Length: 556
Ligand code: ADP
Image 1 (cartoon, rainbow, N blue to C red):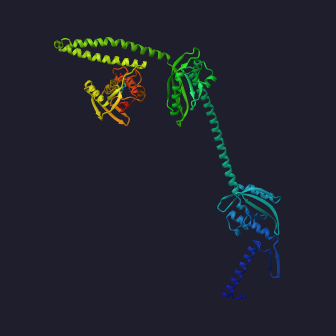
Image 2 (image 1 turned 180 degrees about the horizontal axis):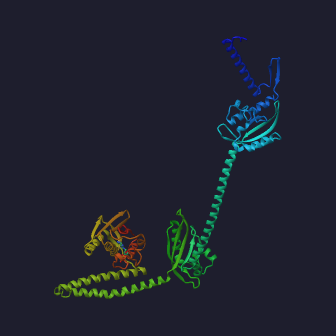
Image 3 (image 1 turned 90 degrees about the vertical axis):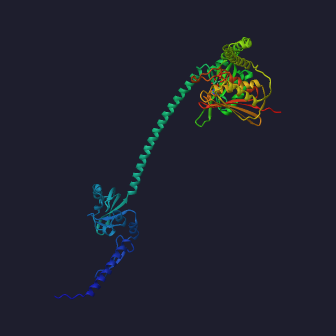
């Protein structure tokens, strides 16, 4: 039989018709899926029939479509009958492609056994289990699989709900890490704590030991010692204090120094101490303390040094009182001896000088030159001896408070000039430079001031073995005249500067052994003090010294 001929136009029309039908069918499927319709009328040749969808509950379909869990329906063979878009997103596949696939291809191999077991059970009863899904990128997604049986037209099927546990698992993992970190931190803190405890124990022991050591030391030195708080309050006395003063702890705390200090020494001691408390400088004073058992006052040298913290704040003061009574007596005896000896020496020396003068003038012209020279040399030695004896006498007079002399108007500039001329005569190898020739007049004793000047100039020469320059300079500030004597010699250290004005003090330097008794500066300081002036020195070891004194200018 011959087939009717189909034209191209007919084919185009058929195609268009079929295209329309396909679009209509797709729309219908989408409408069913999204729950926009729950019934449809189908023309199946026997007329129109109304098909209602068995699960036609729009609310539930929308709910399933939109829910956050993956939802899949599988039949007995494990084929996917239905899936929502969340499941499609989870496995990374377009939604329409998931239908008809076997569900187990989305199960990670390591979860396969559990999955099989769960599914086998699920047909009997509802069950849940954690499994790993695998997506098209081969990534694992941890999920909670909940299975329920479902009565459908096609027969019994399984509804699988898949809850993505990735965030939960990640959070759990993070939590675990945090917990581990926390445990590690806890352990470290515990360890630190233990270490700290050990250190504290160790330090406490050290402290105890050092306190004991301090007490032991303090109680076994011959001096009395104490400590003061920064405000001066005494918070500790050693045993020697209690033994010597005979005071109890209570009494010491109440009246302390006040009750044992010799009344005449009390004010000086207190003044010096409060000035040290204010300035933070070392406290030093000589005073007399009453001995408890016999009431005798004995001389003591008191010193207190401040202990500072790293911020340089005073934490406490450590004080000591050394019994110098015996030394004082020795010194007195020595002074007495020096006084007597120098006095005794003075008389024969004066006669010696007189006889020498007689010899030198006796038949002067007939004296051979050699004898004249001997007489000259003897005179120099006698003068030296006389200066020495005079110094010794001065020292003992100062000690006895009897170095007194009259004042008159003194032209200091002329006096300096005369001293420099004299010095140039004695030390021809030195180079004396005098600066500022103004006429300065002071009220004083010319001989005594000359004694000071000569002592300072002689020292400048004596303690400058290399550089022979000595500069003598005068200057004034309104009321005072200042005289400085500068040398470029061996200089002095700060510690030496502190002591050079003391009686009989000499720097013990084997390199520069020179003759002297350490009296010159002591006497000079007394003389300047007597003139209401000031004396001092600025010096650097190895560079030289500048000694100076200041005197009030003569006022008309
Ligand atoms: P003396 O010179 O007889 O020893 P002084 O009382 O004059 O006694 O001086 C005391 C000490 O001071 C000296 O022994 C010396 O060590 C030191 N001295 C004095 N003048 C100077 C100086 N110009 N340079 C360095 N040291 C000096």
